[in-house]
Image 1 (cartoon, one colour):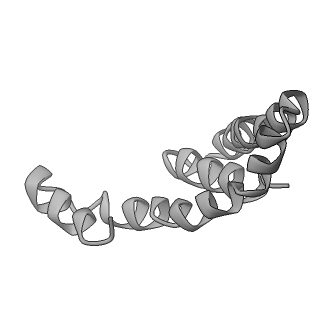
Image 2: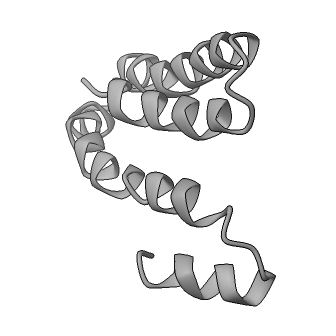
Image 3: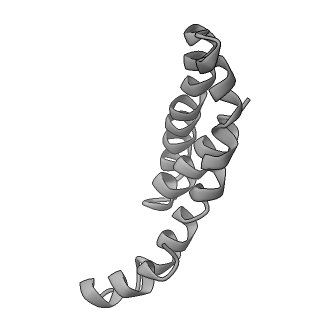
Length: 90
């Protein structure tokens, strides 16, 4: 992913996507932190699993809206997704 960001910048002819692209790459390590929810899936405790997984989009939405109101522009989307990805873990 890190190699694709500059390549996409060249393809689209804009350097403005480099910084947000690199920031979004920080989501990949957060995906590994989802592994504790697999235990609840194996135990067929789907309510607990879905409850833990629901934190990610809820936090991302709230953080994005707050930052958008604060005037961060498209960075509100980038940072909101990052906030949800890193905090929505058990």
